[in-house]
Length: 359
Ligand code: V47
Image (cartoon, rainbow, N blue to C red):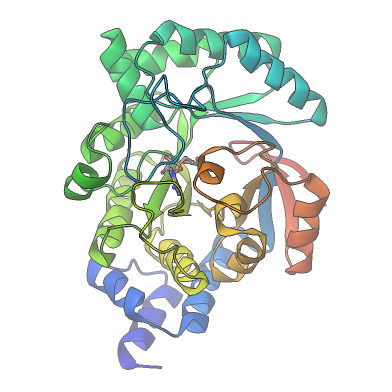
């Protein structure tokens, strides 16, 4: 092992925080087994043999979107083929189908619709919460929240307070992409800036809403951009402590305007997971979203610092629009089997990491 890597390993063993240069250096390391060993040691310190999953259902209310992000195959114009928008009743119907499967969470992420009023989203949360008060509603990325503020004339704080009063439980981590405006200017110029994304999460944390954070990697960003993204999250986490999980999302190029870019390799995906675990010393959980990684790689990622495989999902549209070959959902016994086979203890959690059951 080279000297620099041994020095970083010694810091990790001592629980010392890694700096920007060290993060950048780790991306140049090809010894992924050592990276995995280091990240696994941090995972063990935080969560031991436990590996989390949840039983949930995704609902994407609409794909009609004014943002037209370069990396996205989900959003489309109102009149384009395949455009859809659910009524409140349709969303409720999907929830009614899923609740008997003992879901503990409904995960709602949609798009920046040009016509739907903020009231529609409040009504969806209100009605879901009224009918299923025991199901946690994790809904709306920071990008959507910031858009709601724009279309309603309310402040971000007022938007969050209104949704919280209606039954919103937490925010998912989407829309972060790469938190650097030069990159956003090319990949997603029509939506929240890096500072706006961070500010929605800061405000949510101040209101007592826990949130997640993602990073979309493997498109036009540099290694420095990835490390700076992790550092922006780490800095906000030092301030608020409100992030509960970090989820790196590998870019899926099919059907997007960036379809000339190749999908990241398995080695790159494992590196990103391991380095995320090493850099984000103040975030409890690193989630390997099996839908995007693929099931075999998600299972392997448990040896690279991940401690959560996300959920049963039931119906995933965003990555599948971009060519994901995974199933759109997975059965709970299969998640349990994957975790056990990797030598870990499957723990079913709710959205905010209360233990529902151990298997
Ligand atoms: O924000 C869009 C990403 C995100 C593509 O919080 C793409 O627990 C890959 O954020 N290839 C939505 N990714 C999904 C998301 C998420 C998923 C699971 C759990 C959680 C959580 C959050 O998907 C978007 C965007 O960053 N995305 N297009 C694509 N072509």
